[in-house]
Length: 248
Image 1: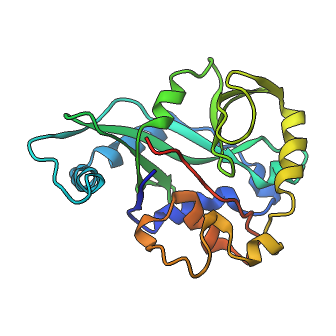
Image 2: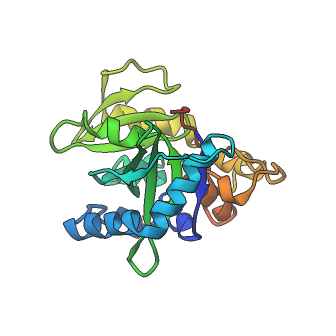
Image 3: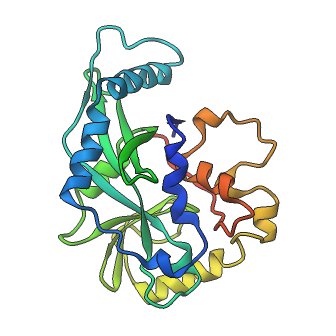
């Protein structure tokens, strides 16, 4: 996957990585107004121009030529594994809202995802672009009432509904596609896997948040959305997870 961070607002979405607090259990539901505002940000002329440039860069600097870019229908709420759930905080849900994904495509078949994030003022803005349209494709398979949950450490995607998770894309989790697991069992599994990777841990001290070391040499304009926030929050109780996404 190739990503590009467009604004500092991308770091705001990384609130999903904050250490567990009572406020972390706030409702993460998405309103119709949120969806409209996210789509408006994604379809703004400046965003379409940025997506066009981004898709051109995916061609190693070659322009799209006569190809055109269009923002497609659909806005997908994406939830990311929450630290309070990993920590076993009573009442914590498996995921916290990370961003609203809006798909885009070019007339020659390229796809990308516009990741919109909620700023401190509550408004939705474009924070990141990513290659591929994985969120939209997976959301199309969600059962009614389920939300799309991402476990970034192993790039696994789940349908989360009530007390059960269904594996949509196993990534490197070792779980079979379509397999189901109880939320309680999942909590025990992620607590075992990531309980020693929270802020202040040896893992965080080594600069492993987001999969980037402090001297990685990566440009700030191409850091993954969640990884960027994790790096920014180190030392403040952040929950450090590497992020990964398959090339689309």
